[in-house]
Length: 210
Image (tube, rainbow, N blue to C red; front, side, top):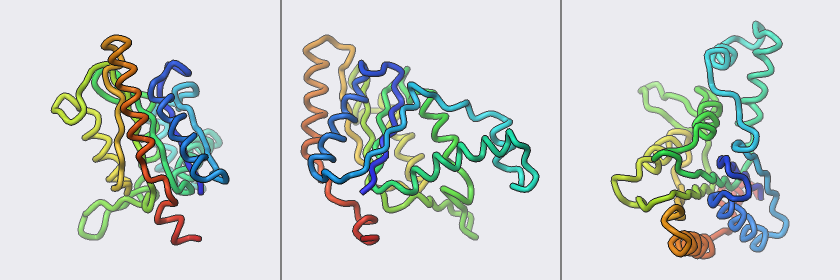
C-alpha cells in the first residue's frame, strides 16, 4: 500500500490542513503498519510556476529538447509517477482568498498532461487516466462555507480531479479557523472525527494488483 500526501499550506506546522493530514496518516499507519507514505510539501518547497518555458518543454519532442527542457520534463514526470504509483492520495489544501493556494494550482498544472494523465477519446470526450485511487481532500478555511455557494474551491477541485480520473473523492473540511479559539477547536475536532470514521482499507486498485 502506497499513500501519497500533498501538503500545500505556507504555514508549516501551524497549518490546520497539515494537522488533518498528519492525523489521517496516523490512522493509515494504525490500520496498516506496513503502509508506505510519501509526503511532498509544495508549501515549503514550491514548484516553479507553470509558464511558457514549461509548456514549451512538455510539447517539444524528446529528441529535440534542450538540457533545461529535459530537466523541466523530468520534474513533471516525477510528479506524475508519484500519482500513478500511489494507491491512496491525500491532498491537504487550505482555502486562501476563497480558493486554493497558488502552490497547489501550480501542482495541478504540472500533472495535468494530455496523453499522460488525461486524454480525449475519438468522440472528443475527456478521459482521466489517474484511475483506481482512494482520494481524500482535507481543507481548512477561516470561515464557514461547506455545502454552500460560498464554497468556491470544492466544486473546482471536484471537477479538476475527476478530469484526471479521480472520481471517488472524499472531502473533509475544518471550518471556522479564524472565528475564535473555541470555534476553531470545534472545527478541527469535527474534521478529525470524520477522518476517524473513514474506511481506510486497501483501495480497490491495490486489491486487484495483490
